[in-house]
Image (cartoon, rainbow, N blue to C red; front, top):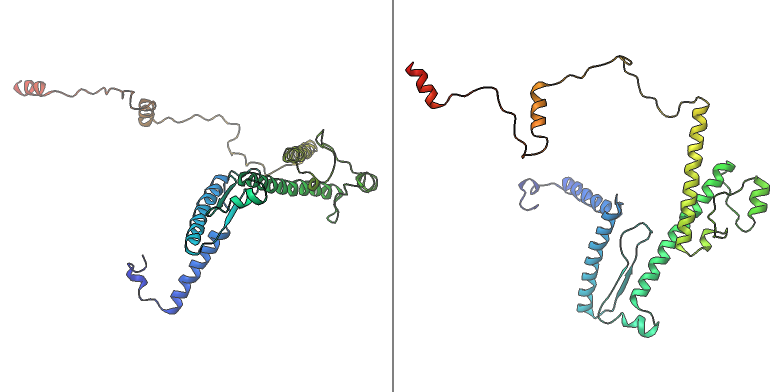
Length: 264
């Protein structure tokens, strides 16, 4: 494309360096940018891994190198599936030496990655809630001595913890379903607290949010103006081509009527 473009042939050193900098910036954004949706991220994962697998296959043919790759999603809400790849018969190593199949390794890796990420989310929610209530930024939950360090000293209690799950640090919980229950309970608790604060503000008469500007003719009844020409056409073709257009009130004379009028 550059060779075919005549305007790109006679560039000085400064213009060439400017185009190179723009290209490097574009590549950096492509490598580090975050996808807006999970489906777009999953598509990027699939295409990138396909190209990596092809490169590793070619490397094995050229050099005889044994390589294996395990890939897994990093969050429970990601749609990318865990997968594995190996050149030649390298995947036999896992079965012969470690007595584990590749599918089992990929599944355990996926479970570990999702649990680890959810542990961080639950820990962040718990600590942020405590700091908001205590109005201190240098405090964290002491799970082992919660009754003494938090309840007695700060007079703060934790409510809404899911039943059937012992109170402990999320980093000590390896069950993904239990972590999801804790996360949902914490999110629901935050939502209820926020709604309660909004209701209390409205009860005190405080203005919540930016009020809408009133019309200058507020309270005055207004009649809608109808457009005669456009309304009939919309009604005629609203249901598709199967509906007939309205008949015109004008009469168009035929050729026989025109000739009879001329004779008269």
